[in-house]
Length: 452
Image (cartoon, rainbow, N blue to C red):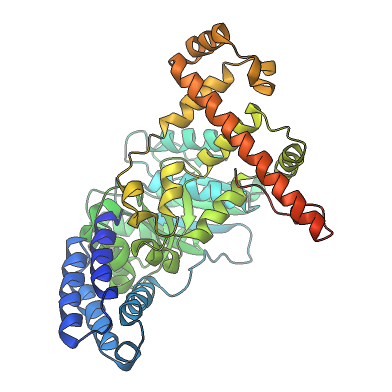
């Protein structure tokens, strides 16, 4: 998402930063390009009008005209305005001190509400909570079965009522079940419709009155563009809600809903769904999203993903093996699995500053399946072969290739890459050791880990 918008904006900035001085005509030309880029991204036209006006007012002011780098000053202004548009700070999920806390999810049918319920429950469990999910969508075929299947996958209980029960009664009974089961958060999955209607709104109000939720979150499908903003405005007027979960933000939609929804409804985006897996729900950070849109990367999120996927004891053991030149193909496999946990190479590259502006990276076709093939090759090796790849002769390579479903040349390539990586690591460790001795230390500073 945002790729087309990001490309258009970066092209505008490239033209601006190549100038030593900016005239009012230069600024107006840039504003026209920015306006068109935002409209093509399906951003609400009123939001575009206000945003561009704010950027232009600042761009022709003294902070740009008297700057030594006026082009960079305009980039900074656009960044600031985008952050302000989406919310200046992260909007956290606010739960009361009562037990259990209640979170209610609303939205149209097909917005991803049931999956978002499971993703939110999974996220809260990682934060030390003990959630329970309540299935109140009694109309959509298999909706309750879907939520129960997701609950089994993440080992979180689901409360369902009897056939024919009223959704408001099911929600209230779900809260009682949470108390009996010593669960501290109840997440209520409500029914949606294909469009906004009075029946859906009335039912949402009755469930709200029955359980008195701490937070009401609306799930909005980012793929629906401006329609999502209109639906959110209708919910805000009739039911009211506290924040938005933006689903399918990893899709190929133009992204206008994410940029427009806070300005139009006054409600912040609290979470963003960035993948199909049940752990692919992130807190929404307006500043980080604005930096991604402008091609500045998102190093903070990248570091957080690395910390979440890396086990501290495992990292310490890895460093010890590196010091003794004991890096094996098993260690190599562990590093590949950590990369997969972080979302894959494609997601990591998107968060690297400047990666989107490098043609060789932008045009490269990243085959995420290569990680799976590499894992299959290593798992087809014996334990001794993983520790000592030098013993892998021709017949062993053929056996490994057959076992992993690849060509012998793929096995040869992996072994060669591994040996080159291990050689570089030895050289790096040697240099670190010499520096440590000169400083009176012992190599790498405490807590520093090899980024492989």
